[in-house]
Length: 371
Ligand SMILES: [Zn+2]
Image (cartoon, rainbow, N blue to C red; front, side):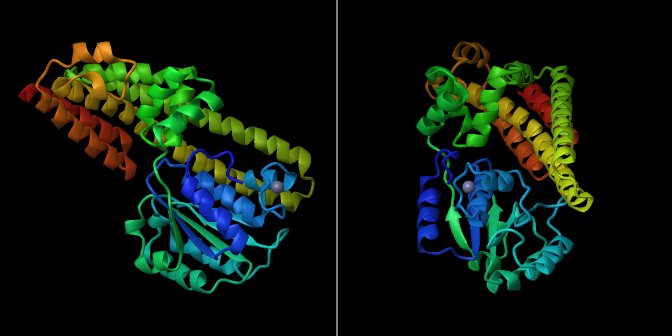
């Protein structure tokens, strides 16, 4: 259980004890985005429903992990919010006894996106669920949840993962040499998810190099890099969409082979299609966020170099380029960094990404011109 998840010693110890002493019926996994809470919630859900207790390797675990167990349900927002109808559907299903297992688990991702009506609907079920029902709520922003929801859950805090642990993870799991792993660990800032994407990028298309080059031009107020940046983001989003579509096609083909009963097959098919849609939405959103993180890391580093020198830069494999780039007044970099941070917040809140990025480049030019 949880062996595949690096860091998070506190949460792992917490649940080892909870499984030994008896589980509560509602948990809230809390902490910043990118700390692996959703993956942890999946493993936790598997461990609660699987009769092996979550060995991680048996057919039952494998099935649940793939989202093919009828006793482990993931609820994610549809559109911007987790809506009342979704919670009503959930509540209506609570009285159904487990299909295959002894327990049924509902994992609510981005629980803070619940509307007030949805949250109020969930409250009563959280308080007195049937004995076989377990809830796992996941949230990057616990402060946005209704206090009455929080108080009915056992809250488990997730912490940023230490650089050393991320370095070890990248060397072992992604085969990077120690220097490269350490450089990426610094950029990941405590997030295993970010570290993983950086490692995949280092092996594959080297987008980071391209985004950093564009960032250097943007910082100088070069107006042409805007289109190149947006094109790069668009191209990558298309690649993600193609990958998701190919994965869905493969799963549906497998389903066709394995499941012969038409009713059962259509049940699985619907689930696979829904999961694929969510996967696509989530991963395309990360494309723009990651692109912006690369750009911000460059900005942040030229700002650091212009004030204090290169000791504390994140892009530690780019020190020479950063030193030759950091020629302007630190104040200008500081202003641009603020613009990038505000843009990230917009993107995170699902503001149209093209509009948000275009507006950011306009502000960059204004800042560069006024300096
Ligand atoms: Zn198992």
